[in-house]
Image (cartoon, rainbow, N blue to C red; front, side, top):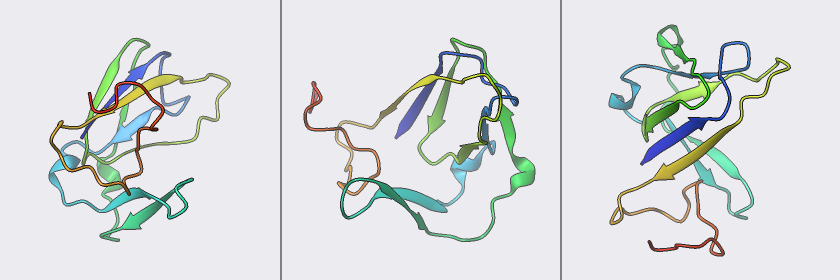
Length: 118
Protein backbone atom coordinates (compact mmCIF):
# COMPACT_ATOMS: atom_id res chain seq x y z
CA UNK A 1 0.00 0.00 0.00
CA UNK A 2 1.10 3.54 -0.67
CA UNK A 3 -0.35 6.65 0.90
CA UNK A 4 -0.41 10.07 -0.73
CA UNK A 5 -0.86 13.09 1.57
CA UNK A 6 -1.40 16.28 -0.45
CA UNK A 7 -1.04 19.45 1.63
CA UNK A 8 -3.71 22.05 0.87
CA UNK A 9 -2.13 24.34 3.46
CA UNK A 10 1.32 24.65 5.00
CA UNK A 11 1.99 21.95 7.60
CA UNK A 12 4.48 23.04 10.25
CA UNK A 13 5.58 22.18 13.77
CA UNK A 14 3.16 24.86 14.94
CA UNK A 15 0.05 23.27 13.41
CA UNK A 16 0.93 19.61 13.91
CA UNK A 17 2.83 18.45 10.83
CA UNK A 18 3.46 14.76 10.22
CA UNK A 19 6.47 13.02 11.78
CA UNK A 20 8.19 9.80 10.72
CA UNK A 21 11.21 7.61 11.37
CA UNK A 22 13.44 7.57 8.27
CA UNK A 23 13.83 3.99 7.04
CA UNK A 24 11.14 2.82 9.46
CA UNK A 25 9.38 0.92 6.67
CA UNK A 26 12.26 -1.58 6.71
CA UNK A 27 11.44 -2.70 10.26
CA UNK A 28 8.92 -5.34 11.27
CA UNK A 29 5.31 -4.25 11.63
CA UNK A 30 4.55 -3.20 15.24
CA UNK A 31 0.85 -2.35 15.06
CA UNK A 32 -2.01 -1.93 12.62
CA UNK A 33 -5.51 -0.54 12.49
CA UNK A 34 -8.42 -2.81 11.70
CA UNK A 35 -12.18 -2.39 11.44
CA UNK A 36 -14.09 -3.26 14.58
CA UNK A 37 -16.65 -6.08 14.44
CA UNK A 38 -19.56 -3.66 14.03
CA UNK A 39 -17.81 -2.01 11.08
CA UNK A 40 -18.38 1.49 12.44
CA UNK A 41 -14.90 2.27 13.74
CA UNK A 42 -11.32 1.11 14.07
CA UNK A 43 -9.17 -0.55 16.68
CA UNK A 44 -5.43 -0.98 17.02
CA UNK A 45 -3.77 -4.40 17.01
CA UNK A 46 -0.43 -4.42 18.82
CA UNK A 47 1.93 -6.92 17.20
CA UNK A 48 5.15 -5.85 18.94
CA UNK A 49 4.84 -3.70 22.06
CA UNK A 50 8.50 -2.65 22.18
CA UNK A 51 8.74 1.16 22.10
CA UNK A 52 9.40 3.12 18.93
CA UNK A 53 12.78 4.83 18.69
CA UNK A 54 11.24 8.26 19.18
CA UNK A 55 14.69 9.88 19.20
CA UNK A 56 14.79 9.14 15.46
CA UNK A 57 11.50 10.93 14.65
CA UNK A 58 11.83 13.77 12.15
CA UNK A 59 9.18 16.36 11.26
CA UNK A 60 7.84 16.51 7.71
CA UNK A 61 7.11 20.22 7.41
CA UNK A 62 5.71 20.98 3.96
CA UNK A 63 4.33 23.93 2.05
CA UNK A 64 0.85 24.00 0.55
CA UNK A 65 0.88 22.07 -2.72
CA UNK A 66 3.46 19.54 -1.52
CA UNK A 67 2.85 15.81 -1.50
CA UNK A 68 4.17 13.30 1.02
CA UNK A 69 4.30 9.71 -0.26
CA UNK A 70 4.21 7.05 2.44
CA UNK A 71 5.15 3.38 2.17
CA UNK A 72 2.46 1.24 3.77
CA UNK A 73 4.81 0.08 6.52
CA UNK A 74 6.28 3.51 7.30
CA UNK A 75 5.47 4.55 10.87
CA UNK A 76 4.09 8.08 10.94
CA UNK A 77 2.18 10.30 13.32
CA UNK A 78 1.28 13.87 14.05
CA UNK A 79 0.69 15.81 17.21
CA UNK A 80 -2.57 17.60 17.88
CA UNK A 81 -2.93 20.94 16.12
CA UNK A 82 -3.11 23.40 19.00
CA UNK A 83 -2.57 26.47 16.83
CA UNK A 84 -5.12 28.81 15.29
CA UNK A 85 -4.09 27.57 11.81
CA UNK A 86 -5.67 24.61 10.04
CA UNK A 87 -3.69 21.96 8.13
CA UNK A 88 -6.16 20.63 5.59
CA UNK A 89 -4.96 17.93 3.21
CA UNK A 90 -6.26 15.36 0.76
CA UNK A 91 -5.23 11.75 1.28
CA UNK A 92 -5.35 8.82 -1.09
CA UNK A 93 -4.29 5.22 -0.52
CA UNK A 94 -3.53 2.80 -3.34
CA UNK A 95 -2.77 -0.90 -3.56
CA UNK A 96 -1.66 -3.21 -6.34
CA UNK A 97 -4.71 -4.37 -8.30
CA UNK A 98 -4.12 -8.06 -7.62
CA UNK A 99 -3.08 -7.64 -3.99
CA UNK A 100 -5.06 -9.47 -1.32
CA UNK A 101 -6.87 -6.76 0.63
CA UNK A 102 -8.63 -8.12 3.72
CA UNK A 103 -12.16 -7.03 4.57
CA UNK A 104 -11.05 -6.28 8.13
CA UNK A 105 -8.52 -3.66 6.98
CA UNK A 106 -9.31 -0.24 8.49
CA UNK A 107 -9.48 1.49 5.11
CA UNK A 108 -12.45 0.31 3.06
CA UNK A 109 -14.06 1.88 0.03
CA UNK A 110 -17.82 2.30 0.49
CA UNK A 111 -19.86 0.22 -1.95
CA UNK A 112 -21.73 3.30 -3.20
CA UNK A 113 -18.50 4.95 -4.44
CA UNK A 114 -17.92 4.95 -8.21
CA UNK A 115 -15.16 3.06 -10.01
CA UNK A 116 -15.28 -0.04 -7.82
CA UNK A 117 -13.01 -2.71 -9.24
CA UNK A 118 -11.29 -0.17 -11.47
